[in-house]
Each structure stands twice: as C-alpha cells, then as structure tokens.
Image (cartoon, rainbow, N blue to C red; front, side, top):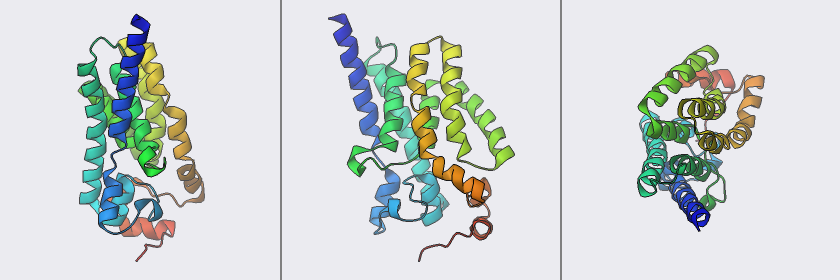
Amino acid sequence: MKIKKKFLQALACAGIGYTIGMLNPAYVIGLRKGYDIRKKGSGNPGASNTILLEGKKAGAFVMAFDISKAAVSVIASRRLFPKCDCAGETAGTACVFGHMFPALLNFRGGKGLACLGGEILAFSVHDFATMLFFESVLLMATRYICLVPITLSVAYPLYHGFETGNWKGSAILGSVAVPVFLKHIENLRRIAEGKEFKVDFLWDKEGELERTGWVEEE
C-alpha cells in the first residue's frame, strides 16, 4: 500500500512537470505572428530562435518563461508532496521532457536549456550560481551556446548527487542527458561545418549571419 502511494505521488509529480513543460511561449508568439516557429529560422521553438526571428526582448521573455515553468514545477511538487523524496527531481525532469517532447505539439519541442536552468534554480540559488559560473567559463572558451545544455545535463545531476546524497534523485535528473545530446546533434554538425551561431550573435547578429552564411527569411 505504501509503495503504491509513493508510485502515485511520483506519477502526479511527473504529470505536473510534463503538463507545465508543454507550455511553449515561443510557439505562441510565432502563431500570433502568423507562422509556426518550428518551420522558420533554426526550427527550434525556444529562446534562441525567437531572438533570431523576433528580437532580443521576445527572446528574453521566452527564456524567462521557460526558466519559470521548470522552477514552478519543482517548487509546486515539493510542496504538494513533501514526503516524496524525489518530488522535485521527478517534476523538474518531467518538465524538461515536456518542453522537449510536448504531446500538444506532436512531440516537436525545444532543446531544454532554459528549463534545465529553472530546475536547478528551484533546488538552490547556490547550485544555480555554481553551474552558471562553470558553464559561463565553458561558453566564453568555446563561444557555442549549444555545448552548455549538453554538459549541464551531465554535470548537474552528478553535482546534485554529491551535494545531497540523493543518488536516486540524481539518476532521475540525469535521465535527460541522452535526449538533450540527441536534440543537439545538428548543432554539433553545424559546429564542424562552421555554420553554428556563436554567442556573439547576441551583440553582432549581422556578423554571425554573414559568417555562417545564414539567409534570413522575408
């Protein structure tokens, strides 16, 4: 009976996270502008493609929303199910999956970076600041944003496990690592071809468009 209750609580946490994760502001913004964001720009319904198509303000809004939805998933689940030892990890991970593979959008969602950040922020501001520091160093060294979620999806679960001793929760967090990597294979190919945008795109859009040979759609 106790095992059944724990299973149902975990299922509820996953349901909360996945449902919230499916909320995609980038897709909604595209619809309001008359297009499917998954068919324009990079094809990614997330903050980076929103910046490319609609500018920095819209991209910042999308990023803030995606961070917030993951944080809300973790916090809400932990408060609703305080006796579930992996409530936050389950809900946060499910939110990332809901963002990347939303049933409402035929399982064609974003790539998970902002959601990963929101998940970490909900666990601890200190954890968020620590990961932000190391990932910022990586970003400045490589200039490629796509490497951040790939490494973060592996590094944080390990950090979380060592810090909390909750290796079951760590394993749940780490379950997104392979899907995140697969989501970024195309980015890695573009890096090899010299066609992937660098972080410089945020302040030198024209220069990056020229460097990569990107042709903006009318």
